[in-house]
Image (cartoon, rainbow, N blue to C red):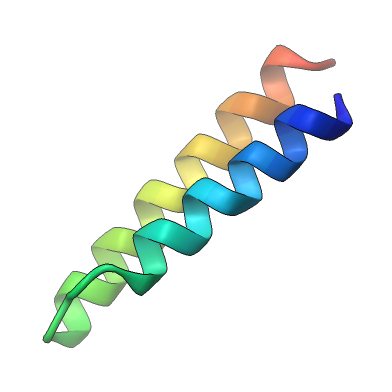
Length: 45
């Protein structure tokens, strides 16, 4: 579980660090990262 959580955190960090020049882009990136973290959490229940 710890590896999956670290992987999700790493993935979300990559998404946030990618080049997004608008507030809308940041919002979409954060939403995508949140979905991946939720998916990983659900898989490890």
